Image 1 (cartoon, each protein chain N blue to C red):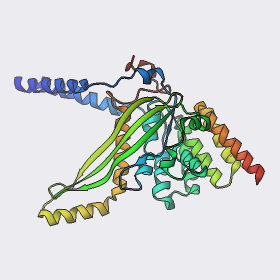
Image 2 (cartoon, rainbow over the protein chains, first blue to last red; image 1 turned 60 degrees about the vertical axis):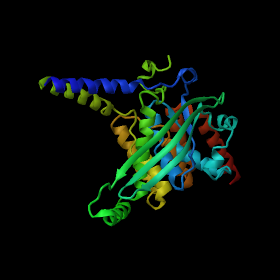
Image 3 (tube, chains in turn green, blue; image 1 turned 90 degrees about the vertical axis):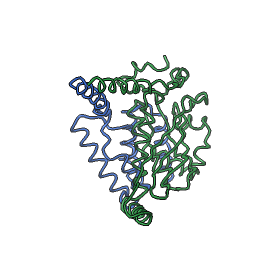
Image 4 (cartoon, chains in turn cyan, yellow; image 1 turned 30 degrees about the horizontal axis):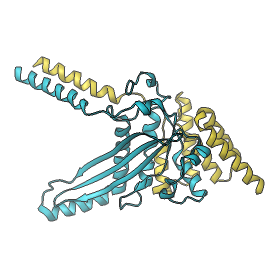
Length: 218
Length: 120
């Protein structure tokens, strides 16, 4: 019993220690805390062309739930397309001055997708979603916060029937659960865990009921 | 052994308490429709989206829950695509009223719509 108890304590200690990784400096972010965030369709460094818009479709909810006004992502995208900016690359090049003038946003959240989709190993595969995020103050151009949205899921490890069996299983798995639908789910998870990370996530925004009690960066 | 069980129960409660927090907004199908309109446009044409979002809004209203930022503006854009400028204007105004942070954008969009309507 004593040993079990000791193990439980050790577990609790480890959990609390894991919270002690170096924390980002929230001073500037706190002093320029935005009320509204414009999310642009992400730049895409992966080879999956659909990645930008899958990711974009999952970005609003955590930001709004954290207390920010989030501009309607699809309307913003359509608006930019109608105004001669057909791709995320061009949209990400719009000046902050123009963004202020057209949207009146306090901050822009820029994303770059680094990795997207399935990676195959000999007897297993992984589905990966990984993007870098940067929150920029529209007024001053300063970076208020940076983050990483990522999620990984192992699929079909150690399938019976050896390598051939595993490859067949992996192929079937991909057909049955369309890879892109999987990344959609992972993207949602990645965005949510990035925003709500207690150590390095976003500060709570003005529309959140606990906004005034968020102590980070004070 | 009992201490251990108590410790686990406390830990479990901690974890659970992080999950049962009520969301601020009634999201309905807003984000899923955004996904569909890009990935499976056949399943989310403007008419279908409009119907689903209106259902979601009614449901949220009936439950007394606020709808998320962007939803009314998205609906407005769907009406605009269908040529119903009156409904589009109305929905854009609701977005602006619920979320004054959107005012600069909405005012600009409404002006553009008026100009376009004037040309047509």
